[in-house]
Length: 82
Image (tube, rainbow, N blue to C red):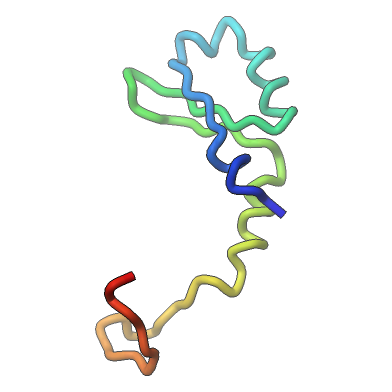
């Protein structure tokens, strides 16, 4: 099970800082950390531990609903205040 705390832990670094310390950053990702590499402040790559995305997809399975006609009314009561 993925904990929200682990999802929120993301280190952001510029690509110029990544290059000389690439192996050190890879070790951090192997330990479970997510690292976002930026180019001029714009995120370009998220490095995540292998399999972490599969874990997230498993948790989301059954939570997201798809509708054939998204512009059509649905038969589900909902509260617009939440």
